[in-house]
Amino acid sequence: MRVIEIRGGKGDARALTPGERPVPEVGRGQVLIRVRAAGINRPDILQRKGLYPPPEGASDILGLEVAGEIEVVGAGVTRWRPGDRVCALLGGGGYADYAAVDARHALPIPDGLDFVQAAALPETAFTVFTNVFEDGRLTEGETLLVHGATSGIGVMAIQSARAAGARVIATSRGADKAQAARDMGADVSINAADGRFLDAVREAGGADVVLDMVGAAYAEQNLQALKPGGRWVVIAFQSGNLVEVDLARLMRGRLTLTGSTLRARDADEKARLAVAVEARFWPWVADGRIRPVVDKVFPLEEAAAAHAHLESGAHTGKVVLSMA
Ligand SMILES: NC(=O)c1ccc[n+]([C@@H]2O[C@H](COP(=O)([O-])OP(=O)(O)OC[C@H]3O[C@@H](n4cnc5c(N)ncnc54)[C@H](OP(=O)(O)O)[C@@H]3O)[C@@H](O)[C@H]2O)c1
Image (cartoon, rainbow, N blue to C red; front, side, top):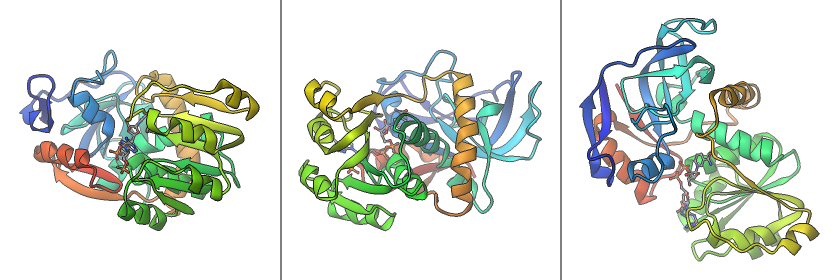
């Protein structure tokens, strides 16, 4: 099968090169997916640079999410049949014609979505669900502050929070991106190109939950933007991981600081999340409140160009590889 390999084990986008590998074996409890499209995520860039090694037992091939048809059903799998259209969360191995995945980590492709749109869903849906709604405990009538609002994660956060009846304050760096976040449903959209957003968030009433992918540079403002009882949920630290936190402020405000990574969680935990995501988010996909925003599609062989595009930061929403 065709795959994308990282020449030399790590490097810049140009290290991504087409190669060939055997089709993966299908183990007990797994399905083999004929991959039609694979979503690209920021963690793929980190892995390509050698900064985010795959967890024990995961494929060394990049790719955390795919959509396609089931080709082979492994022993012990009852839910799926050959030919079923699914999208799935992977620990790796998505940039390939075939991927063997835990059958419990596959979800049906909602009606009306093509493979490219479906491949744009799993990683952001699982991540946003568990961080915003489980750990962040966002509920109807509350306010979510989301940074990087036009990222793949940001778009999913805006759409799902709105679907849940929450208000959304979005930040992004640049007027065009701020407009795009507004168009995607953010109630308040802040151009934080100068690194400042606190005054505007306060003017909008503050936040109950912050979904933070920025880290150090925004830490102080995040802390001050939270309402009493607020939750600050860290999913990345793109500007640095070391911060000084005023614990007195945490105590006075009854604030919660938490964070997580999805990929490192074990298979049972991802299976639990798959059930919850299907129950909570899939109806919102079906009724259009969550709709994949695909910025650009690249053929599998052009994975290097696709990475360069994502790294340029010019995108809004998701960048996807197509195996067609
Ligand atoms: N913890 C987890 O389980 C988990 C899972 C998936 C993804 N993530 C993380 O979530 C983030 C988004 O992922 P993605 O795939 O959606 O990525 P993406 O589309 O490439 O977006 C990255 C976003 O980060 C923003 N950003 C980067 N550096 C920044 C800085 N110094 N200050 C402010 N904003 C900054 C960019 O904002 P502008 O557009 O305004 O430039 C951009 O919107 C990544 O950091 C990724 O590693 C975490």
